[in-house]
Structure formats: C-alpha cells, structure tokens
Image (cartoon, rainbow, N blue to C red; front, side, top):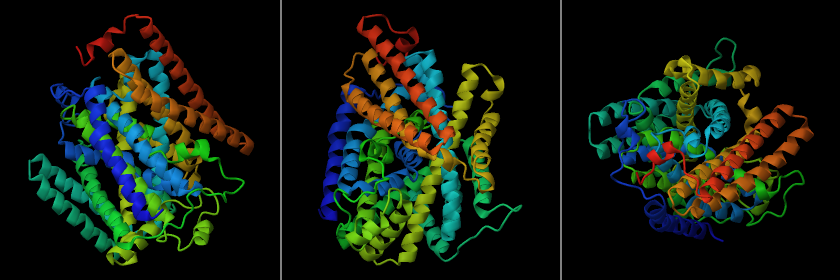
Length: 566
C-alpha cells in the first residue's frame, strides 16, 4: 500500500472516532455535565488546582502524555511489519486510548481530583489503594529515570538541540505571565511558536557541549542538571511554567505534524518495509503479546491515566472539556505514532526493502534515531529544507516532549508521596518541598545507584515498563468500569478494552519474567513478580465488589456522595 493511502485511511478512522465515537462516549456513557463544579473551581489553590482554558490544558495534557514514547514504540514495533503496527495504533486510539484518557479525567474530577490510585479506595476498597499506588509509583520511577537518560543522551549526541530546548523554558515563563494577565491567546501562540522556531534555527548553527563537571561524564552532568530543573519546575504553580511550556510544545508538535504529513503528500514516498515481516530473527519476541506493550503511547498507555487523574483533572474548567482534552489528546498522540510508522517504513528512511531489513536486522535495532533520520529526509524532500535543519527540528521535538513528560512525572511523584502522607498521616510527607526531594532522590538513587557514574541505572528496569504500564492501563479501565456499574450505566465500552489490555499485558509480563529468569536477572524477576501479583490482587478485589453489586448490596457511602446523580 502507498504511504499516502495509509495516512488517508488512518486520518479518516481517527476523525470518525472523534466526531462519532467520542461524542457517544461523552454524552451517553460518562454523561459529562457542564453544570458540575470541577475540583479546579472547588479547591482552586492557585498552584495545582487552577481552572484552565481547554486549549491550554490540551497542550499540557498532550505533551505530558506523549513524551518520546509514541515515536520510540512504533519505530521499534514496525519490526513485525507496518500493517499490525498501523492497525493497533488506529483502532487502539479510537476504542482504547480515547476512552481510557477521557474516563480517567472524568473519574478523577468526580473525586476531588484524586489520582487514579487514591480514588481506587473509594471505588473498590482500601486494600486496592495501597496495591494500586505501588504500581503507579514504579511506572513513574521508570519514566522519570529513563527520560532523564534519554534527554541527556540527546543533548550529548545532538548538541544543536541544547539551545532551543532551554530557550523553550524561557519562552514558556514569559508566555505564562502574559496568559495569567489575560493577553490574547492567539497572538501569544503565534509569537511563542515563532520564538521557538527561531531558537531551533539558532541552535542548528550553535551547538553547545557540556564540559566535564567534577569528573562526571557529560551524560551524568546533564542528568543532575535536568533533575534539579524538574524539582524546581514541579513546585512552581502550574500556570507559571508547566501549562505554557506544554501548550507551546503542543503547538510546536502541531507544526511538526503538518510538516511531516504535508511532506508525505508532497514527496509521496514508497513503502519499503514489508506489510508483515517474515524474516524475524530467532531471538525476536513473538508479535503476540509483545506488539501491544511495545506500542503503548499511541494506542493506550497507563501513564496517561496517571497524568489525567494527577494533573489534568485538577485543571479542568468544565467537565465536558474532558472529551476535548482526553480524547483529542489521544488522537494527537495516535497521529504522531501513525506518521512515525510511515516515516520509518518508507524510502525516506530505507531506500529499498533490503536496506530496511539491514536497518531492522533484529528487534530493537531501530528507534527514535530512525524517526529523526527518516523524518529529516522526508521533510527535506517534501519541503526543500536542509536535512541538517530538519534533523535539529525533530531532535528538539523529541527532547522537548521527553522534557515535558519528565516535568509532569516528577510533579506526579510528588503528588503520590503527598497522598501517602495524607493516607498514613505522616506530616513530613504532606510537605511539597520534602515530597519533591524524596521523588527526585528516588530517581537519582536508581539512576546512579544501579547505573554507576554514568547515571543510566533507569535503563536496567526499563524492560519492565511495557507490561507494567499496560497493566496499569487495564487497572485504570477497571476502576472506571466499576464506577459506571455503580452509576447504572453500560460498562462494556471500558470492560472489553480492559480485558484485552490486561490479558495481553499479563502474557507479556509472563514472557519477560521467564526471560529474566533465564538471564539470571533476579532484580527484574522480583519487580516483575511484584507487579503481576499486585495487579492480580487488585482484580480479585474488584471482582468481589462487582459480585456484591450484582447481589444488590449497597455501595459505600463515600461513593454515593460523589455520584453524578447526587
């Protein structure tokens, strides 16, 4: 199939998802109420709970959940062929990710903006809350530790991306102040994007390399700098840096998608990757179940539920905005995953099928680098830009996305620690400064404690991320489903995706468990077992609650108080 046809069919499918399916889910299943007073208005502390324009909140949410994952996952999964990757991205976006993200926003907003882990106590039970939050903390620890390494490596390997990446923070701080003072949003958007792309141009001619600091490697020095920044950013009011930075990055990605999609129509590159790869290596994992955990962001991801219920729900101005922020955010991420698949599967990356097989000679041999290389060639051929400038532009996009995810991730870790302080009445943990220090310390302990002076320790447990992340997505859908059952609404639209995701992720967790045992990696064996057993216990607790509901036993009083019908 031609690259243009893949893009056209994918866009049509996602458009139908937005205009038809998401409207049905929002109005008939979640019944989003414009008169419901959201936590942003109920609490409105000016720091974390802030009523926010839905376009700005969409930018924050989208760039927080996206990161580099909708690029890396699809770029790796194409190894099995472009057809299964495209199908999972398109159908996963429409029926899984959009429903999951919108549902998590709705569920959290109905429970004072609690994280999906904390509100599981109300929906399922106290024991579930403790188990749920263990899985969430592990996912956040993996994301923050690894994304710090990813950004540091990108700064070292692409020094031209350093200047625009840090310039984006300055631009965001200025725009945050102006938005807070009610300046025209459209004008600020144009000026902000223009300033960002001017910094990209300047960066392409101004590479910045970090010298050795205290005998640390440049990678390790960047990791320390990045976590220092993330700690400061996580304690600032969301309107000051997080919202405007994510909003500008969202617009930057929108421009990037226009360049990439437009280049496909202008260049019309042939697909050189096989539809189904029959030349997989003997050591390659099976497409089922690994496809469904390799492509997480871009189809469905448990990390989205953490962001939806952790930061985005606290900024929701009106409850119907959950559809725009959650479902449209999922479509934006699916669009990025789709163009990634086309980019690394086409002549823009590999001139022939033989060349593609050489690049994808084994599972994991290509990733974000393939997207940057292929995307730069695609933009150059389609729009006439220099390959160097296009490469800097895409590298900056990857860095900024990873950076915004890391910003939100540290803030979310801080929320989790503070929630633990409230749950167990530990006064010190309720303090935002102490909670932030503990969050950053945990990430750095993993980064340097397990990885030595290089700071790459997060990569050690990263192989567990795929299955753990998708198990979390299934558990989030489980909480949403039980809420729907309690409210007397159809739950099959969340239960079916939940059953599929949990079955695939449990299989993947079992596959990786035996792999770790064969490798003698008992740290990963232990963590994998903790995740599998914990999630199984949560599901057993949930099954007990559903059984009681079917027998007509009354629900918990605190759940009824937060019911939409109350």
